[in-house]
Amino acid sequence: MRRRRPHSVNSGGAVVIASGSGTKIDARLGNLAAASLHTPMAEPLLIVEERAASALARLREKFHPHHDYLTLIVPSIWLVFWMALLDIYFYNSEHIRDGFRRVKELAPSIPSVGTGLEFFAALFLVIVAFTLIYALGQLLNGFSALVLDRLVVKKLLKYPFNLYLRRLEAPSARSDHDILRDAMLESSYAIFCLNLVPLVFMELIVIAFSFRLSELPAYLIIYSARHPILESSLLSLGAAFLVYLHFGRPSRTRARRYYNRRVLSDAQLRSFNRQHWALVLLLVSLISLSLWRGEIWIILLLPLLNSVVGLVERYAPRRLTQKILLGPFLKYMKACFANPIYFAANLVGYSDLPSAQLIRMVKDEFVEQIDPKDFFWVAYLKIQNRGEGASQTAYHFLATYGMVRNLCNSTAFALTLSVGFFLMKWPLGHGPSVVAWTLTQSGLVYALFARYLYVYGPYFSKYVLRAAAFTHATKRVEISEP
Image (cartoon, rainbow, N blue to C red):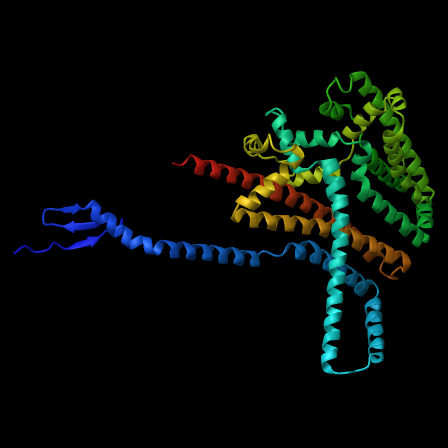
C-alpha cells in the first residue's frame, strides 16, 4: 500500500511535495495554493495599511506646532514680555499695578447675578485677550513681511531661488559669495542704504537721550576743556568711525575687485578716490568740531546726506546724472560701503548655494511651463503634493522662518517703545541700565536678523529645492522600472 507523501506550503505560496530522494514543486498546485492564501487577505491588508499611514500622518501633524502659533502668537507674547519686564525693572511695576487697580475698581460696578455668568464673563475676557494677542501678531507679521521680506531680502539680498538661477548662469569658477555680492551691487544707492537703518536708529536714540539728559552736552564741553588732547583724539576717532559706517572707506583696490575696467576706468577710479578722501576728511573735521562744542545733533548730517544722494539718484533727470558721472561714482561708493547685512548673510551661509546640477535638475522639469519668478512656488507646491513626509518638514521650516522673522521685528518694536518710555519718563538712578538695556536689545535685533537669514536661506529654501529634486529623482526611477 502506497503511503501519501507529506506536503507543506513554502513562503512563496507553492506546495512542496517531499520525497526521499528530494523535493518536487507542482507549479499548478502552487499557484492554486497561493491564490487561496493571499487573495482573500489582499484587500483587508491594504485597507489596514492605508488607515495606519493616515493615522501616522495625523499624529505627525499634531507634533508640528501650528503655523499661526509660531508666527503670530509667539512674537506677540515676546513683545508683551519685554514691555512687562521694562515696567517691572525701571518703573517698579507702576503701569502693571495701575492696570490691575483699574480692573478691581471696575469689578464692583458689575452686579453679581450668578456663578455661571461670572464664568462666561471670565471666558469672554480670555477670548478678548487672545484676540488682541492674535491681532498684534498680524500687525507684526505684516510689518515684518514689508520691511524684511520685501525690502531687505527682495530688493537688497535677493531671494534664495533668484540666487540659484544666477548660479546656473554664472561660470563654475565664480564663487557663491561673488554671486551674492554682484546681486547686491545691482541695487540702487537708496536700497543699499538699508544697511544704515539700524545705525540711524541708534543715532536717533543718542540724540533723544542727549535732549533728555540736558547735562550731557555741557559735560562734553567741560571735559574737553580739562583734557583737550584726549578728548579731541576720542572725538576724532568717533567721528571717523561714523563717517566710515555711512560712506565707507576710500579704496581703489576694493572697487577694482568688484568692477572691471569696462564699468569703471582707471582714470575714473583715481578721480573718485580723491573725491572720496576729500568728503571723508571734510565730514570728520566738521563732526569732530561740532561734538567738541557739544552739538550732538550734528551726527544726523550723515544719514541726511545719504538720503539726499539716494533721492538725487532716483528723481534727478538722467541727463544731469550722466553729466556729473553720478552713476559711476555711486558704483564706486557702493563698492567701498560698510555692509553689515552682507556680513550677516555671509556669516550664516546665506550665500552658500546648492550645486548647479541640483538646481538644473529641478528647473529643467518646469522650464517650459513657468516663469523664473515662480520657480520657488512651483517647487514648494510640488513637494506639498508629491513630497509625502517632506511636506510636513517644509511646513515646519516655513513656520520657523516666519517666527524668527517676526521675533526680530517684535524686538525692534520693543526697543522703540522702550526708548519712547525713557523719553516720556526717565527712570531716575538707572542711567547705566538704560544704556545696557538699549544696547542689549539692539544686539538681539541683529542676532535675530542673522538667525532669520539662516533659517530662510540654508534651511528652508535649500530644503525645498532638495526635496523637489528628490521627488523628481524618485519619480524618474518609478517610471523607468518595468
